[in-house]
Amino acid sequence: MQCAVCGQEYGLTHTCAGIAPLVNADELVPPPPLRFAPFHYFGEAFKILCWDHAAIRRASRDNNSLVYGFLIFAFAAALPFFILVFRALSAGYRVSPTVVLARFAIALAVATVWMVLQIGLSHVLAKTLFDAKGTFIAVIRAYLLGQLFQCFLVIPVIGPLAAGVGSIAVLMLVFAEVDGVAPMKAFGLATTIGVIFSLLSMWFLTGGRPPVQ
Image (cartoon, rainbow, N blue to C red; front, side):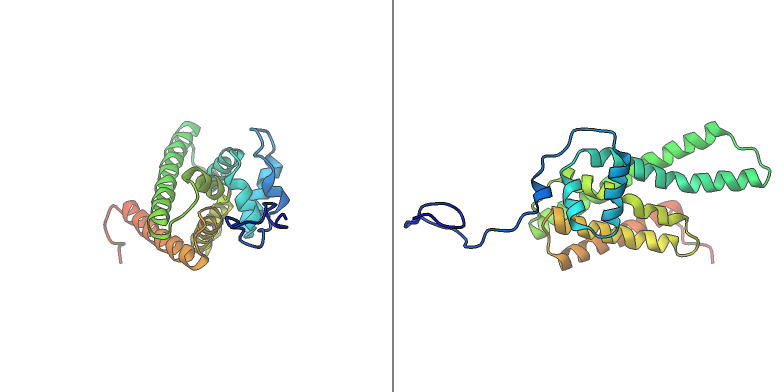
């Protein structure tokens, strides 16, 4: 007689767990090849921002997430530059496109390296402390596509706070869905890493000096 769950023959060595796990049909689809689909991936990024767990898992298996995630990350990083240039032009100052592009390229490169270091350290800690099951590339795919929260930085007053909360929330969800870390452990790890890197960012930006009172 065959087991109704796993299909194996009953016997002394039968080790069926009993209940087959439910799997979403979308998660069984193989990852798509590199393609031009900006609206689709922007929609996926918005779903991640809205805590869509299935979208995070899809992004973790799709190399397109690296491409479109980086474009979203670059766009969000460019927004403050656009605002500064607009204000300078409105005030009558001359702005050199070459200088602006050079500074933006440097800022984007530094921000990218900083983000990779943050995710790399987080993933190593998740592996060491919580026996995480995912891979670094899968974590990067999902987290990078979830970078829409960076756009909150341009909101006056509450923008930096909203972006910081968004970073912690997305990182927590990625740990839980991709690395298989328990939600409370993922929250604790994401919060700790987020706060540490925020303090380090402030320290580097101020040259290690305390803010002027």
